[in-house]
Image 1 (tube, rainbow, N blue to C red):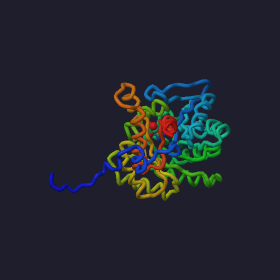
Image 2 (image 1 turned 180 degrees about the horizontal axis):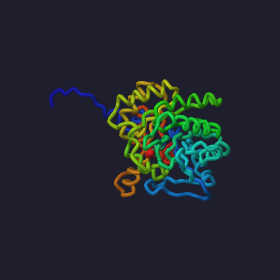
Image 3 (image 1 turned 120 degrees about the vertical axis):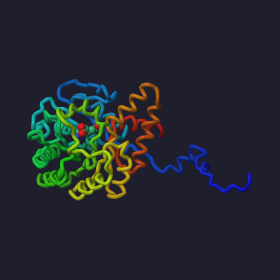
Image 4 (image 1 turned 45 degrees about the vertical axis):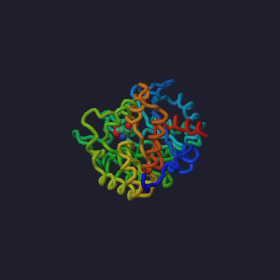
Length: 327
Ligand code: PBG
């Protein structure tokens, strides 16, 4: 061979120690947020059929899971309520003794070290399953803001540490910030689902939360998946309205958006690794087609590499256990 001139990249991959020294992205337990579904009743622990390993639990069964999170160093949970009673204005979403309000109080009382994030939406609570108020088949923006603000304030009163509005009405961050401030909760941050796409990956969640729309779809409020520049406008609006964290959802098919939002805003960015992404991995692993642990860790790390500071994931507890094992 004549004189070849090339760089030997493999020098830095020769051993596990060398690879660890030059690793650019490290997934930490502190990055993970664990979603929970709380239901009314006693002694309930229903596995969600399309999400093996994820359960709807009643409050008396919550303690065990919360203890495990504390034990493995997961710092925060995001709470979704599945109420028994639904009506046209989603009144259980802002009831003082609603299922989420009770769950928040219980977790803050028994597991003080956990940061409790309240998902603020109406779709689990409305009989039509939409995230806002409906009149003549139309989802109304501004009247929805009042109910969402009431919901956020009631969650803060119950002790939520962070409010996470996920409804995609315009102005929800401005309305909720004002409502929280007027109620004296100036110190409670908003983790806004600023960029939420109308995604087919939410299917299993809607089984878990009983929140499928009874007619139509969410395309008039959630974003159109092909749009990147619009995602940046959404992020900018929420930031200027007072959001403290920005969520991009779903994560896996939207890692380009995660990177854009991080680069353009610089605020803490949260990637939501959604239910359909969970279900795909679980199904392939069950068939023995992929290595579950390796795939999950690679996937979560890719979200961080894309710019996410935090990741909401149903794999949070598994990942925390695996991180502990590595040590
Ligand atoms: C409610 C809401 C949804 C998710 C979280 N909050 C879904 C939806 O728009 O129906 C999806 C979470 C997931 O799929 O894991 N607005």
